[in-house]
Amino acid sequence: MPKQKKKKPGLLQRLALRYLRRSAGFKAAENDRLKLSWNARANAMSANELIFRDLPTLVSRAREQSINNPYAKRFYTLLKTKVIGPRGPRHQNLARLPSGVPDKGTNALIEEGWKGWVMQGVCDVTGRYSLIRFLHLWIETLARDGEVLVREVFGFENKCGYALQILEADRLDRKLNAELNNGNIIRMGVEFNEWERPVAYYLLVQHPGDRYQSIGGQQYERIPADELIHTLDPWRPHQARGFPWLHASMVDLHHVGEYRESEMIAAEFGAKNIGFYKQNPDAISEPETDDGELIEELEAGTAQLLPYGIDWVEGLSNHPNANFGDFIRNSLRGVSSGSGISYPRLANDGAEMSWSSLRDTELDDRDLYRLLQGLFIDGLMIRIRTNWLKMAILNGVLPLRFSDFDRINKPHFQARGWQWVSPRDEAVANEKSIKSRTDSRSNVIRSRGEDPEELFDEIAWEEEILGQKGLLKAEQNTGDDKEKTDDDDDSTDKSDDTKNDS
Image (cartoon, rainbow, N blue to C red; front, side, top):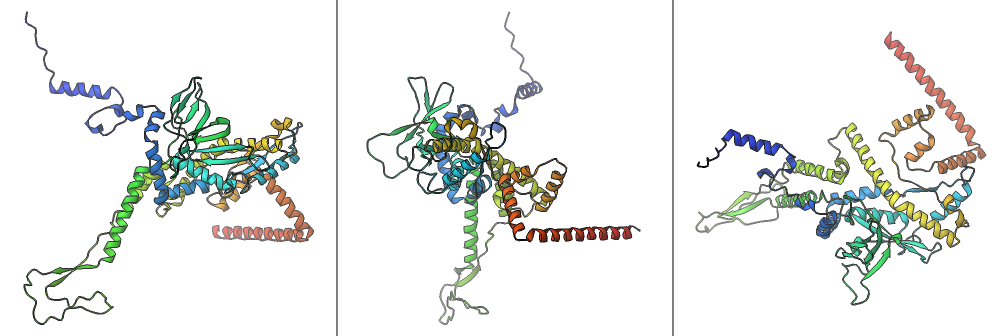
């Protein structure tokens, strides 16, 4: 019996089958003609493989933008001013006695010792930075390169025998990858144990970008992980190295920079070139009498006779383009989304935004700054303070017992805070919250980045000075008079309201 041919499905059947196949899974995973340019195969690689491939180019371009692109520069400036702040985090030691009472003597001793160590010329091995300047450089390097190294130098030549050295992650050789005999692995210069815990870092003795390189000698220096702090903001598990924070915005930043420069050059050329001299091809020969002469220096209220055969053509320029501002704004909104900072802050442009919109964006930005403050306090400051206290006690700088270390080592860093968008409304709200016992004076002070105990001590000292000079009583009388005046004003307003109602 001859084999029957299968009947070819009709058009409607084929369309139905195609629809079923396409709708059976994730649309984002479909490979139709509209998604040919969407190549996501690279992200099937491990995080380390992807970073190994693209890290040098990303870092190089991020550094170029940090010195040439004003919006990239603005991003790093905001991180320094908003996350670290002009004074850095406020340090406190919160040790308590066995009875639970604050150990004021020990706390004051540690806090004073810390103030001496963070000064310029003490905490940094180069002697060039105070701790605040060190932190400003640290966070810009972290954001620009995606990672930063801080080496802790124990036994340094200062009183505490402890100092810091900031290093670029270029010193970690990206090409150093190996499996060691002890079971550890090295990924891009970082040695991990079987649990992917960093064990050591292999630093190049010289920066690979230096002009002068020594010939021969030791190439790497193995630094144990308990002597080096490698900070990065992880993107995926198993990740050994970081990458620039502006990676999602760099392409838009590049095009915005190129377009701005081209538009400005075109506008400048159009403003300078007011017209052209055009030769008339119909003018075969020059007449015997021609008083026309080309004069480039003109005065107001004058006219000029051009030579025979020369026509004047006015130079017209349509630059800057009418859509220039809209294009820049729309592009920078994408850049701001990639950076995490709101458009008005990043672009210094709040002209078209309402007060409530500006307030909302400011609050969102502050949440981001607080997130980053937790990153540098938990990952850097607590470890530095703990190791400094150990070395200060061991070197006799602080007359404290090392056997009591666990009790007295209670560091607390209060990151910079912010006042409310409307200071007057904030003051009224804080006053009501304190009176209703829903907030405390100390918490309000800490929200501004201040130390409540220091502020209370200063207020007590100020009250004592005012009392000694006889100014406290006069100030109280003035305050009473002001309250009476305010009460009179309130009663007047009430009586006026009553009259208006009647």
